Length: 192
Image (cartoon, rainbow, N blue to C red; front, side, top):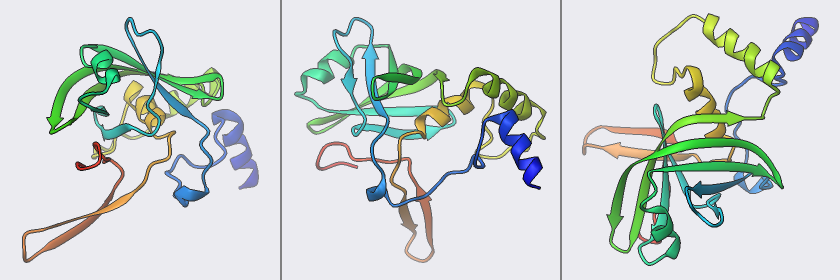
């Protein structure tokens, strides 16, 4: 078994199964920063703590601003933007996004963008290629989290930033359902 795991690690570059790891948020040290880069922007905008990961099939990212924020005026008319992920000074991933909507909530705004393409250096290109071939050969079992092609890379990139998982409760007065989700976030001080 140890030899099999060692060979798998050599081929795939993966040391642990590709599952979501849950740890106490307070124990993590920030290591990756996210920067919003648009066409014609003079400098990138750090959105590490203000972006919202809202969907993964397709990938949906939201950016929140106060309506008075000069950065909102810089970004609101951008049809395409790029998210650059950096570890220190090193670029480790990028996501190309296109604007799909905007929602004004009193004095706050959410700009919605859909992922179109992602590239990362989490694994070297040879390991990425081997893992892509493994995915292609895997039995296709359609479900709500089956991701293929570049969408899988886009979601991997989005999940490289730690997320808070909350328990959402819905009820019709008689029945109740509770489920975990990390696809949420604050919009200003009064909206969620």
